[in-house]
Amino acid sequence: MMINTQPAHVLRADDINSDHAPGVAVGVGQALRIGIDANIDVIDLTPSDTGTFGVTIRAAIGCRLYAVVDATEHIDMWTDDEGLPDFSDVEMVAGTLNPLATLLLAQYRPIHQPYFGAALFTGRRDEHTAGLNPMQLADLRARAEAITARPQQLEAFRQCVIAAAARQR
Image (cartoon, rainbow, N blue to C red; front, side, top):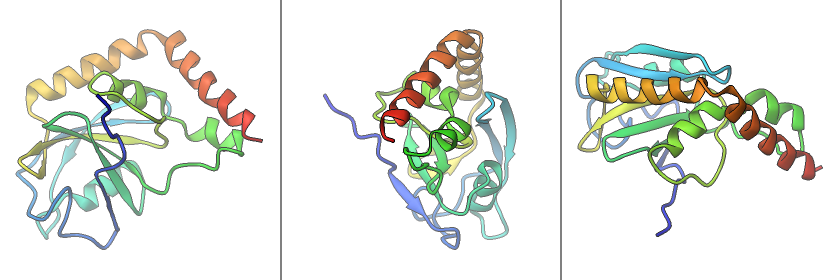
């Protein structure tokens, strides 16, 4: 069975009424941010004055436009939609690749591409962005820490992606 990991939605920076789908954000909670340096940070996921999380998501991952990928039925991964580098620029690929976020997503579903830039894992209730519940947060964090405990796996994945980019030259 093939599962499409193309972003479910691409949202503009001025699209403040839609985080995952139309509707307001669900409460205040926490999210897990995965940096390109494999830093794992728990952040507060707070809605803006308009009741959506768009501002918080953009600030957490440092982007103008973002894309969301379903990790599970109740967990989403947000990335910079403009963060996909030109694969002929090996240095850019190496500098923006996020092996930890890619491998963490792969713990939950098949993937078809590496991900670049910071990533933010949030919860989802129905079709609305929400904070992660304590079990989701603990599971994501434990899985991320288990991956980082195997730095050779992260580096091997990183080198495979860089080698693929080098062949694009």
